[in-house]
Length: 216
Image 1 (spheres, one colour):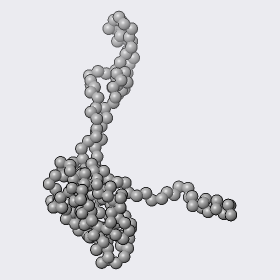
Image 2: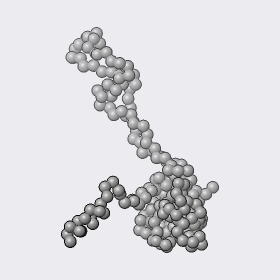
Image 3: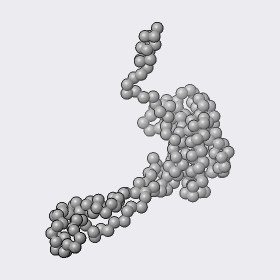
Image 4: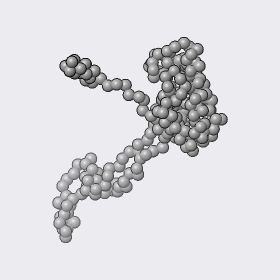
């Protein structure tokens, strides 16, 4: 009996195969970036350097300038700036690291989770909606209106999925309003399974989503 249990447990462990992970929760900063194009920067100010200072040498105190020049090893031009940075202890200048929109500016995919076959947000779905509620408070989002679009996979009838997508879009709007957002900012619309994500079939679970589109 024990041997049988061990064999069954071993069969469930398949090297190199991982369970599908839920989509990563999008941050409020990324939502602002995606919906407005205002992506900001998290770069730190680069260390100021003196471009005219090149190379270095080690000379005993009191050595004459000529001796100092003779003591300095010949350096290839392309290595001089690197040598100065190491000698001075200054950090190399780092390029600014900017967030970038994950897709077309003005569109964002809220991977909001619902209870199966319903328009009730799960705790994870509420956490994602909270990120959008936070994003709405950003100055770049002030005065903007958004279409909240519900989408489903092609599991079930067209009429069922159309109704479900509409209810899910409205559920997100209702939740955002409960968190302090203005209902006047949103238009809720359901698309059923008629707009699958690029590269997927209509039956793909990835099409169960809520999208936000900035309105002109």
